[in-house]
Image (cartoon, rainbow, N blue to C red):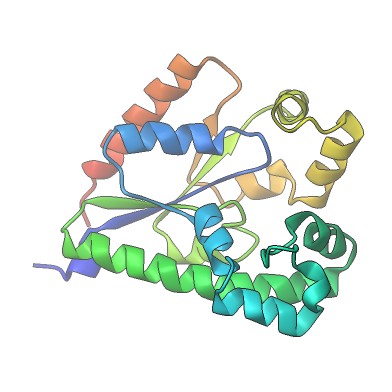
Length: 207
């Protein structure tokens, strides 16, 4: 009998801004999938009173805290968006915590003898996490749809959204790492059918 760590399949779920990655994660959750949300872990990494937030203060100074002692996310985002060195420092602080939490999550899933688990990570490919999962699922939409959805969701201008997209790894480049590309340009029902079908395939996989 193979070791538990060899039985469970790990799926790395990723996608660009407003691609519908959260929608796919929600569908998977309804299907019974156990999902690690890297976005939530990233926020916890620098929550008020955390070691991560203290590291941020040590590196960037107290100017990046709100009056309530929280991380001033808008201010730090503006800094790192314009300064790659600062971005690297912040990512180092956050990613250390997120990786630790992801490892704990997977260990718990293995203890439960789950057939599969999902790591929902926006920068899965950019951060090299794709090397640590069995399958990479990439949620993709046409760029025009991506821009329209991002504008509607965030209230950003078209130019602001396009700048964000341009700063990310291109969809074409990400596709080279994907084992499955989920086209989320159509209806929710179409996406649900695709995700259900592919999830069932994973559950039926054998080592």
